[in-house]
Amino acid sequence: MISFTTTRDNKVLGFRVSEKLSAKDYEEVLTPAIEAQIKAQGKARILIEWDNSFKGWEPKAMLDDMRLGFSHWNDFDKVALVGAPKWLDIFFKLFDSLSKGEVKAFADGEYDAAMTWAGS
Image (cartoon, rainbow, N blue to C red; front, top):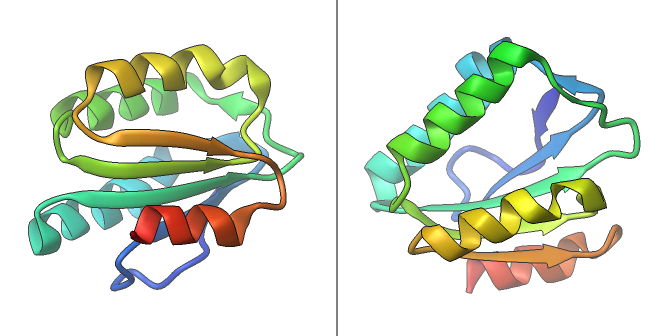
């Protein structure tokens, strides 16, 4: 499940993920919001915060995540990750090394610091 932690017109799009991410989360929330920000601002600045209940992705949601990342590979300016599970580190490092944008991890509870970094 994914929900907004900021408004869609904010300079940084904030999301909170919990439980299991579904294809519906990508189709109805994440992808449209990111694509609208890219269209309006040229690049996307994103903050993703993980809830302790996060359990991963449904199979189609994994494909949607990869599709979103690859189709907008160079459209991400900054991606702040707050409280992400350690098992996701390798994916974030790979994305950071291959994309033109910056990726930075923050500890659980550092939402304000992450928002400040992503917005600067």
